[in-house]
Length: 250
Image: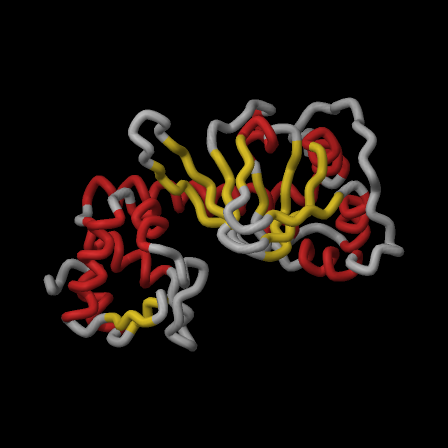
């Protein structure tokens, strides 16, 4: 199989050795990620040797300039990837990332800065490695290529779904779909977007906080959801599904 990337000069980083008390925990976190699904324990440990751990506080953020030279893996916490218009102050959330996700894949592939920002919703723990080291590691272990392509395919599908929703569906339908996509099938509780303020939810569906607040009240009045302590709970899954499928208008 041909190399996915050309070779790069190595950059010396502080290595994380097996004596580190978190080494085993970090290795298990990498193993459980879809991005490293086809990676052997030996290859993951070799990558981990090149990584350093970092904690991001709530609301801390990084720019494309800060991230373009490093590749990050999320051990815990939630981060949003967003673009911002400095003139209008409007933001659009491109992705919500959480445990097991990686960034920035685009900079990894084309070596160019990606014009987006990253912000932590929670106190987040990440592992980082230089882009040069990451590319060399991928070249050394070509069996990881398939898992990387699947991960990229999943992200591309998400982007296509967002573009389609904004073009074809109302904000109420987009909000209903967002809730449905983030419901745990067993607990009926929201995951990933749980406890996010309406302003952040608005950024995910391409609208404003006021519109999201109005739609939440509409869904609440018709009995599809309940709201308490900044938490949205799904009360009637079938009704919410009917709204998302545009079979029922509250």
